[in-house]
Image (tube, rainbow, N blue to C red; front, side, top):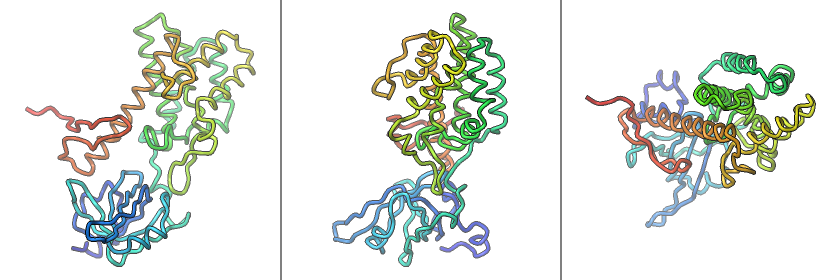
Length: 337
């Protein structure tokens, strides 16, 4: 079955999340190769098992016809143009490459970067307005001056912060994700402070807004999506953020005890040594920041999983197993009568 010519021309290269509307149709896709493995069946026939991805999700694909040549010509991470048929196999969508379909590796400029990089669904201006409102509410003069040095006195930092993702794969992995995550964590911390009034609100809000700023050095937007930088691989955002904040704390001559308390929030926010924190949280504010930051990152991932899987199949009850969170998720969001 082939799509009508006028429909193919109108919607020539759909996103992965939209393929559920084109089951049993032959289509051309532009996708990134996430994984590939040359296999052989019991009859001795070689085939290429692939995973394609774009900003909307991933797709299993199989090449039965040009397995060895496509395996040799294409590397993981390449963006390719290819033709195939959308089918359902084992309860999920699969893309079977056509007999005459060689995967064509595309160069930068031959496809739209927008195909592989998502953006926050919120207005980045409204996110920054929220951050600035919180900064204005901080009463401690040193912490307020520190925040203003970053968010009002450093245009280079601000531009990077507004465009940075908070992750490459796991959570808030889209342009503006870092700003969105930072504001959400700070607002939740503010709410906790309204209940636990013996918490240091100014310290906690400052730590929340700054806890992940090292990520402006961890990721870069490339022609095929979000990639980890060399600095991100070798140094990481906790050390990088510590250095950035420590430098500005010295610049404003902040008291040593205040500086140590804030820097402790930065280095302990992952919560556990095995999760990458140099130390575990040892103040009430550090514990609150870790728990809220951890909650927001996990909820963002869960909501992304639900959105992606329900886009592919609105009738689905359970997600696929998520290796990062170690479980499947129930997808139904309405109570049945």
